[in-house]
Length: 65
Image 1: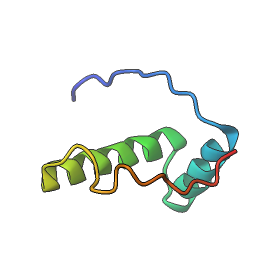
Image 2 (image 1 turned 180 degrees about the horizontal axis):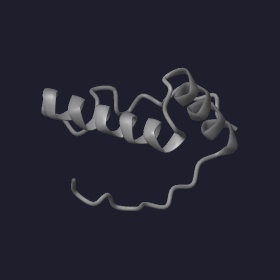
Image 3 (image 1 turned 30 degrees about the horizontal axis):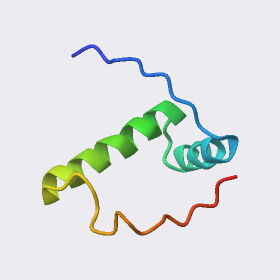
């Protein structure tokens, strides 16, 4: 198995808690959930051949403080 790279990541407490709750629902660790989400994003990008979504200029609706 290929060695995994370590990447420091800073998240807001709200985002971390949301990801942690989602990870628990999916029976994953927080790290595993983040890796899963990033892998899915890369897979989608490869599938559609785009780096960004078509609505890149539309501001996201985030509930993060």
